[in-house]
Length: 265
Image (cartoon, rainbow, N blue to C red; front, top):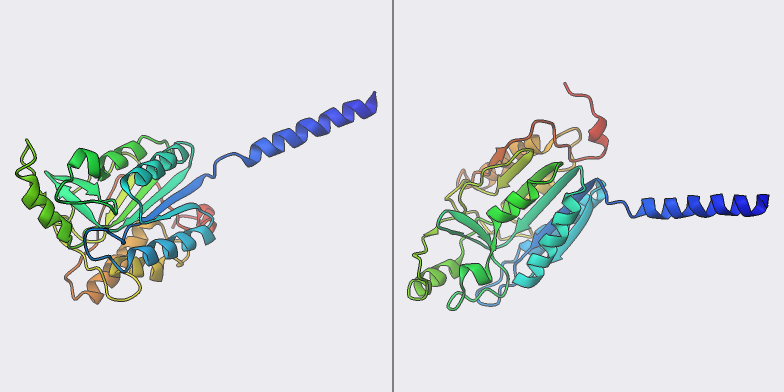
């Protein structure tokens, strides 16, 4: 009888332990790089940027999902999966690098198969504003980093051809528009609203390169990181590109696991 009892206790303990292993990580990240666009010249940096930043975050204890060159259906699937993880996380980072569009004051991620001569907003783009709004409903802290304000040749064709196909006039803006940061949310852009960021001619874009150069500094939160990133990008571009951010954070958003318990000065 004692053997059976001990076996039952052991079984329950193992079952609980296995169930505990399935608990979502408290710090999650989604990193997406779109560069191999089918209807224009590819961008050389996004895949490198996404992989490097994803690897660096993973080393720091983040549970990272990295995706490269996503069409719209896969992009929506990735975001839906990430939103479920964010709902149960203490902190979350969403990083996107690639092409985007500002249409009538709202920002959109551009999937790699976007075909500007036949595309529509609802069918072929993914709203950045809606994505951020959904992420912001989670109880934890959210940081959104967008290296997406690039000079986009697809935008010119889309604007020209859409005027004859759309019932509503589409005003295509330069770069990205402002995105209000909801409660507990931090949003950073590679350059100021309404401006265009450089693609870069080396392995990484100026914005992503600066993040990689400073992300390993200890005891810094994401706002401090952006100050350093902004300084480097302004220096490397001769003041032509100025990273921008909006924040409604009320607590520090630490990048390192070790910094979570760091004392505040």
